[in-house]
Image 1 (tube, rainbow, N blue to C red):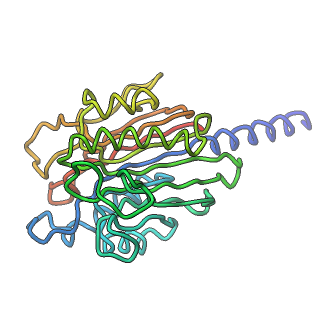
Image 2 (image 1 turned 120 degrees about the horizontal axis):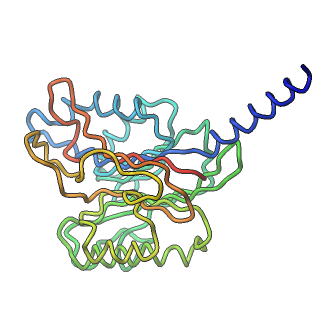
Length: 277
């Protein structure tokens, strides 16, 4: 009897350690707060955007196109999360950001910064042929139970500048070297505004793994991520990604859930990936 109790205790510990080694991340362009969106205006869908986030319970949620009032609303509604990041025109401005929300009971924040996707990444700036300032939010997190450290970049590449997208990809690869992350667990996610065959993605995929094509599983859900709020469209444009380095993805899902009125919560589908640390 004593042996069975001891064996049961050992198996329980191993089970808990296994769970602790599993984490998840969501990348989600929530569409900025634009009153001209009519039935798809943020004020009409914000509750259901947050409901979706709360339902899937990702450990990390990288959001794009978040204006301050949108970030604040998500922060108020999701009490188990904290966030890092601020707008692309600088801290305290009414500009879009790419914040990272994280479960603070599970992960301790060690470091955070916002970098501009430009020739001068530590200064507020617009890069190359970009139409707008673009940023990546960078965070270093330590798992409170295992002590494992995770490095996360949440990005939003420019929608017009072809040179800017390619140079942004090169900058993010260079940051692995300058920050000494070559042998670390790294996630790069976001709306990269380019499809898998594009030059910027080829630059990134020489260094990172695309979790859409992971080992041991098949990606689930639609092929694409940009729906444009068109519920009749076959979504094939995949421009939102979760890329990893030094981590093992175990599943990839593009979530095409709908609101109660059968419209989409955003003009992009969120991407959800589970991985082993």
